[in-house]
Length: 203
Image (cartoon, rainbow, N blue to C red; front, side, top):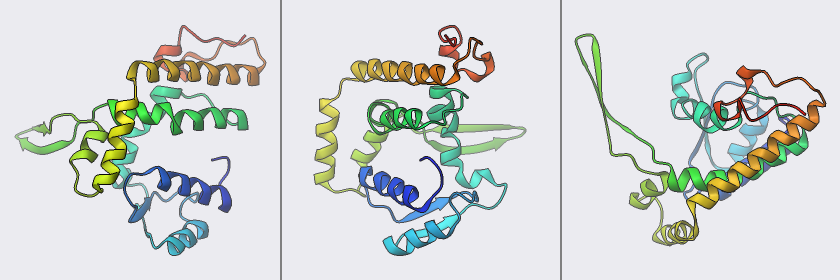
């Protein structure tokens, strides 16, 4: 989203809900004013969604989201500031299409099974790694019709082609950033992801 207005917020939430293979029951946000405001309260009332929030300065209340900030955001896009409409559209194109499909259908996750403290050490055991697609196919929370739709999407995808397309679109995004900068300075090392350190300099 560009900004935190009522209309962009509503449109963004509607798009996210429409892409989800299961119905939403609740919205849970942190305490940022971009979320805890009258717009979101009104939206939750109109859509009959429960609305809860985390405690201030307790990021573990949102642990399932916070743990993805590195993998889903910084690892892919680095620490550059993308703040133009063109850059926003390029980011959304990736998140709504190839990157979303690649992550949900082909990248496995590990879920914690148990955590036991023995003396000063903590021992963790995990369930076998599965993709979000596999978790949904085993779930009884979505219909068989929806599972068939997901299976058709999965069978139509080529992970290698998705990865190549993601790389091309990432290149387009960083070219847009370079054009915006209009500078001959090299992009600071610490602001790039590891894959981009030697690849990108502003022309």
